[in-house]
Length: 320
Ligand SMILES: [Zn+2]
Image 1 (cartoon, rainbow, N blue to C red):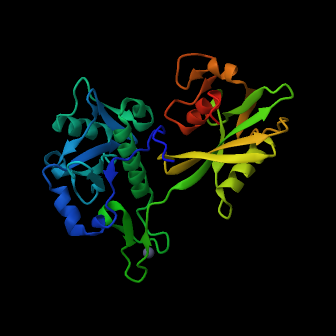
Image 2: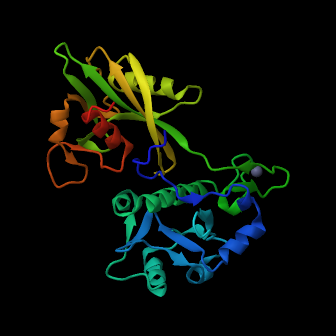
Image 3: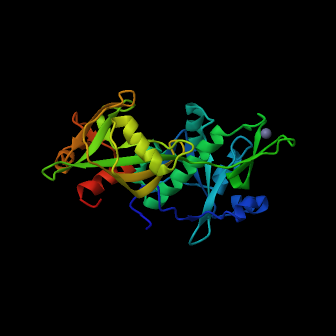
């Protein structure tokens, strides 16, 4: 069943997979009076009191050069207005400031904010559009040259495909997402008390604890990946698992696949290359934890926009 409670999902745009293959149609959309553009800058979006900063066709016209093409995101369901994203990341801070002033965007109530932190201020729809835009921009940055022959890749299909410029090679490449499994592990003790496993990761320091997670390897199913990751990170054998839901996570290109797991043995063998520590927590323990980024010096858990937090909150409510 579709789960609209997960941030970065709930895309309101029609992606128009067939129409966007037509370069003429894309050019017509770029010049349409009601077309609008989501500006991005090094992982940041423009946020104002009214929500997400959007630019008109007239505002972005002068910026649509060969180094700065707009990527088509889709058509609005209601008025069929075309939505594009435009990336300003090639500008240094000073040039960005000048550009922002020139576009009349810099007001007291407007600022560039990292998408990760802006999610909470945006509507569900705008957050989903920004996540899509960021994922597409990330793909363009990392796919400028052909992986087969090294020649330049040429953008096609409104930004959703690239073709090698070398006629003898002619390879096409398309945007990809990397599957990442994320697991909430539960153990029930001899008194019937349920605890879930939360771990501190080396990359975030010990204060933040979260569910376990890891990339799916080539040659394994997502279930196999989830079971392997739990064994590698904390030495637990999984008795049963259930897939719960997923979340696109464009930092830079992941698709998070959430699982609920049960184990009968709670003895941990922690991989300290990955984790600082791991601990079994009751829902009462978790109620005492703060949100990631809070001023508190105590234990913190991931923010409400993450699938990790969604899994934790659902488990605390006894819904898993
Ligand atoms: Zn090539």
